[in-house]
Length: 329
Image (cartoon, rainbow, N blue to C red; front, top):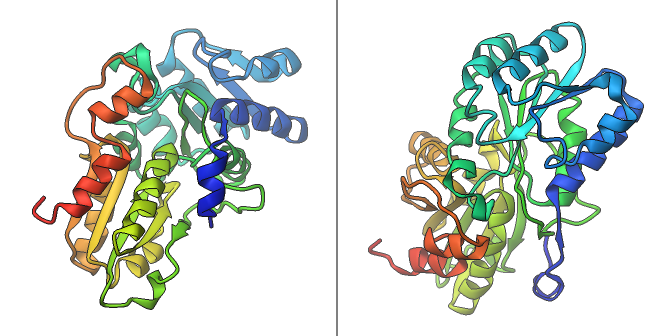
């Protein structure tokens, strides 16, 4: 788990895209089945070195995401492990039908890398801010959906998704983000983890209100800051990272939810169809509880600095606290 004082003091940032590109490069040295395709975005996905070192296993399709998905499906049928690399606003958004029909339906081990997801893409504006991609991908049968916590977890996620013979959507963000995991942390597809919890959370003392915060990706840094504040206000709190959105770790969701007075789900995505909707479905069937959502409320993005956008769309520590402290919300 994260150490509170170390987190507040360090505030180190690293690039998820850099971690992805370097890890994939290293894996290609060991596994000749890996083939990389991109839609004219090699520099942005940090895969230029792969093009230079492995030109026979690098395919530039140009601005043709639909064709890229089809070519990848064919390569997978021939025994390769294709990685298709683009911005998440183009892949899976532009080529969703090809991903559905040619990749997911056939349960092919194509790895779909969607960079520049969420709001913090920033000044590129709504056309490049994908806030719908998780909903699009988790609805597809056979599809695995992963949104890493930070650069370190991105490295581990790439190493793990290569091992499974299923299609995977890996969601990355553009700017460097806070490092929330450590070198010793493990990563397992389908498993959530406790990022932080107050010392008394498992004691379930009735005199302290117990709150569970769920989320994924870099936005969980805001959840941690809110949790630290809540403990000072006589709350007991646990923060859970669900980096694998599908298949979701139902066990940790249900175990954490038992006995809490509030559940809050954070995501840099539309509230409709995201992680919150999945958790709500699980709890409605197994453990009915009210849930609060800190997510994008049915709006498109816009241009701005990442911090400005998180504030405008009410995705900050302050907004999390308002949700929790306002019992009438």
